[in-house]
Image 1 (cartoon, each protein chain N blue to C red):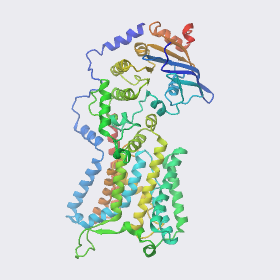
Image 2: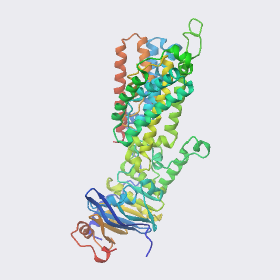
Image 3: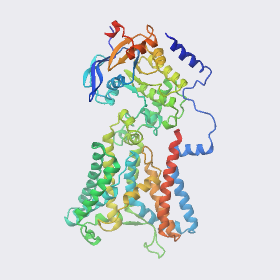
Image 4: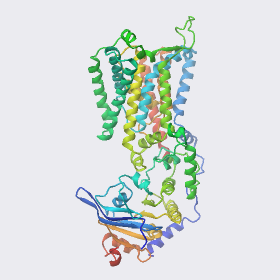
Length: 259
Length: 366
């Protein structure tokens, strides 16, 4: 069996008396798009937050390429190569595209100017930001120094995805990337995911949009009542089956339920 | 695959022939107003700069040039020096979407520490100055820790510390003023920042009444350059803006939000401590009285300078313009012989106009 890139075993997280994660497992294989679906309150957000360091699980372990990791902050997860595109994008509206892409990991000028006077290397960051955008075919965003708030929703999403793609070396997690977008923009984002996958990056896609998940996912992780109840192949199941499993109307397939 | 998928596919068929650029921009020509809005959005400092230029032009014309007398310009710069220094500190805090009501109190407390140590306790003047600045720094750190550790709103924290530092001023000073003669005899260095460099002869031919530059103004400009550099050219500055913009996004981007906030308030406190040195020279004494509204004057300068009270945008250059605009209106209106009440009224109107413009510019994204 291939070694999962990112794996979680028996994750548990309680908020007071509410159990958000109940012995949840998770497994992301190399070079796949893994869809994660689940009803509201099923705990998929908590699961994803645990994987990207935004939530510290009470128990259970997370393995990155087979090695246990303990993220205490999103920064640590990022340093380990896990990039997350958050639902609300986590961009700073008033800062420029380039500033946003390098927020929290700015590049300083070489030599004394950078080391002592801490001067930023704007030219270099702008060039890298432009490269990252053109890598994903987003170069039509022309002015890299434009404030993010002047961009449309789809363009912002593009910036957030490009940021993740530029720095994510191991895993990219996308939380509801199409939720706030129109039909056209959604299509672009799905295309972007295809391009990221072609670059060899495994992607975790959390979404309520079944057609989108079924279109791009190689496998679908179904979350219910705080745990993974099934992993299905979208080619073998219909969307209504998936929804039925997700809501408990249908029993999860025996063999896969144990996976 | 099921019918749902084909349903989605058919919905997307409508996309065929649609524009295919991922992020192409609308080509429609925006209206003039829209372009003006966009221009100010990208160059926020232009608004105070324009107000400043228009104001001096108008006052120059109305006073038939008396406004531009070198002495008058020197006086304006001298008058705005302290407010500009406190405004620089205030800008740092306001850009993080916070506010520091205690800047004036910190400044006065620091000046009392300097004067007490140097005059009453005979501490060498340079050490007394450093101790005073350290006092400002610690006051600022206290603000920052209260804001981040207790998660209290900055307004409430600094409203409280404003009173506390104000009370400390009275306690430490015993409500007594240290007179200029005593300072001059024991620690003339404390008065240094009020000294003036003559830039030319006055009407009588001697340096008296001629244009001058106060040492404190030079110090203020130096401080402003350093803070401007920090805000606009370093990662720290980017983080300060990002926190004011959206603290959650900043946290997710890996910025240590609380640490940066504590640094901001501490730095603001240190700047108030530096302003204390200028204050002693400017007043010519160490007094526990006065400067009750210095905090509000500093906020006024920051707001008129185009820095948003909602955080995330603003600049030191804008604040300098803001302080100068207030100084220019004060001076210009008094030269034209207008009742001082009108000056106060004008300042109030300027604040409201500045904030309205800020709101308008912010709406650009919608």
